[in-house]
Length: 121
Image (cartoon, rainbow, N blue to C red; front, side, top):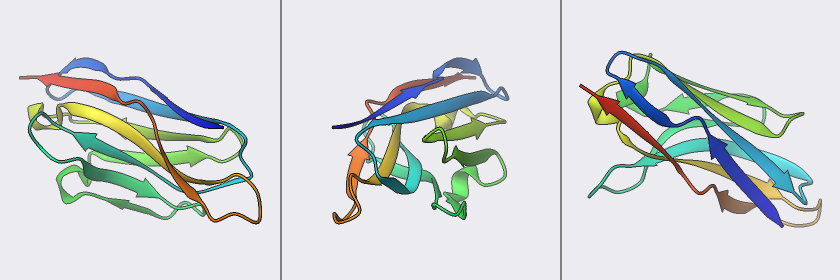
């Protein structure tokens, strides 16, 4: 069984910063891509940032230059540093990872439970 657990959300004023963390645990052979998605009320879930197993990154245009995704493979963790936050960044942020539970299986897609980020104006 595999779990992704996020932490680090909260309430911050516009222009402030937050750092989200996501820890993967359980029966894990390897982790491929990891990423962060967000979903605001009434909107579809959208990709925020993605990082490959060899640390190549890509970002949504709306967060480029403000957010930074990173990972620690030894700790099985992915992070999202969010700077210069705007009210429109308010959403539930979800961690995502493609994880292999053994060398013979194709990777499965896993989600965390989500963490609320609220940016006040």
